[in-house]
Length: 131
Image 1 (cartoon, rainbow, N blue to C red):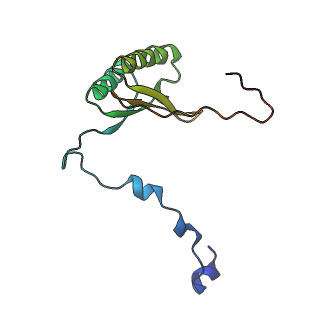
Image 2 (image 1 turned 60 degrees about the vertical axis):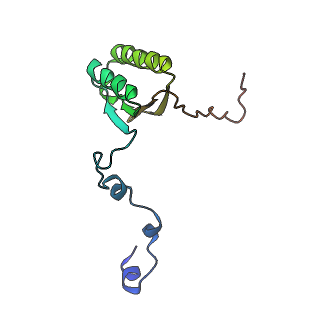
């Protein structure tokens, strides 16, 4: 928005876009009133954090797991994720990657009887998909 738009009352282009920072800073109290289930974010730094995820799944909470702290330790990360995937399968939960790029690696884990709808990657034009 330029100076003339401010003076003349021009249209504010950003008014249509919600401010995500305001949404993220919204106040909430997890104690009052208590919910039946929660969505919790856990940063995976060590095996203890993996055990925390197992506990949360046992309490029927959904977990968003940030694996960035262990990205530089692939063997350790693979061991913990294998344990989580195995447990999730035993309780009839589900696991899916939310984001996996250079900056962010997030995994969604769900408790018993909660399934994640997963979409197949779209084929690129000119490529052959074998089912």
